[in-house]
Image (tube, rainbow, N blue to C red; front, top):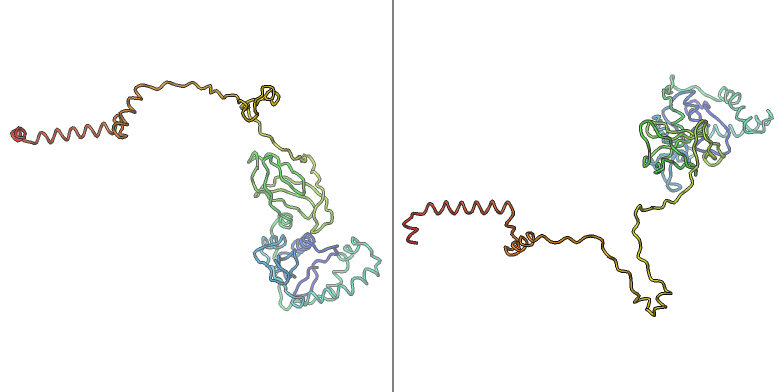
Length: 338
């Protein structure tokens, strides 16, 4: 049940077997479509509203549930109540419903869940608001018209999956084959978003792109988990079995044949000392170049200096030119005396 905290007006009420994420999302979407976006949602600390690590502790504001993620995308603030007394108006309204609704259903002869929900939408909510709703203390409304057209995507159970190398995604223990798109041949290794919608359909998105859509039937489990998937018309989504791939070499190396035990015993040869086939290399051995051998010998004699290096040749030439220039500066007589 969703009501206005200022006027006690009932906006949404349905009977469900168990309060779940899907049931809450269905009610919030109907209120937004009929009345518009509201400023804040005041609720208890249910697991579909907030994440509480330990019982009795405060909620974790950084970890969002599916409902918290949807309301954050719409800009709606979530306020948590740590005690029933904090939501006094809601608790009093719940008490009135528990006292009056069973009697109304008994008088009208309603005994099924579908008939009860139809009675609530068509008669009871309007009559309840006429008797118990109060005018607001201030004029005006805080509702704002919602301009988004993707509420079906916002109010969905969204999880992330990684595309396998064969371009498949695992959803509800089934393999969904993704078709080749116009912008990319394969999505292997990419992270896609799997959206389980309120109408039991499942869509797969990659960023702003819608990749595929499949239909499923709900099995009535926790949070309305979907059951078997049904392939959409004109689409083929086979179930791929798990196959173990074996690596095959194009040119495997032959293994040497080991001697047979019977041959070893016949020849009285110990298995440990049995001869093994010799491995013969088929590569041709090239003869060393004699010039290269002389050059290596010269390098060893000069303590690792390579005389054929262009840098060494240039340095030797510069040293010889410097020595000749210095010799030309010495007088001839002094040179003879020396």
